[in-house]
Length: 97
Image 1 (tube, rainbow, N blue to C red):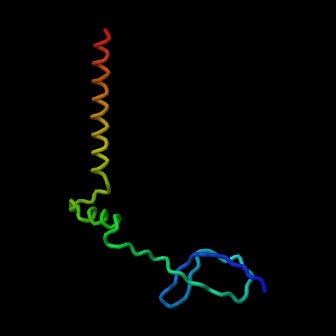
Image 2: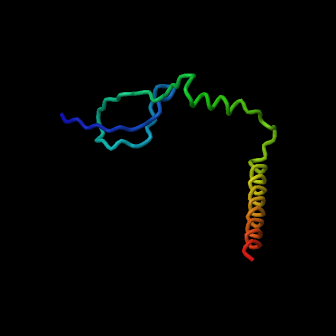
Image 3: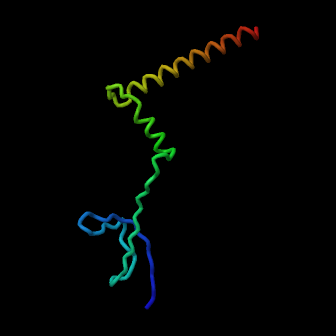
């Protein structure tokens, strides 16, 4: 008897059946299945959960514009920087004359 091992991820369904992510590359026949849960439980004081709590505590504005307001803010910021850059170039041109 030879031992061939392959590792494939999958999902254990509520009814006890398995749904594999990929088709095993093994010869059909009897197999042994070893299940290992991949659920990770982070402690409540984990920095990730602390950061998430802060993010989730931010009040929502009530508007869901799909990010249009953010895009408008970015465009306004770009325009301000372009005006700022033009003013710098104008002042540099005056100083060089």
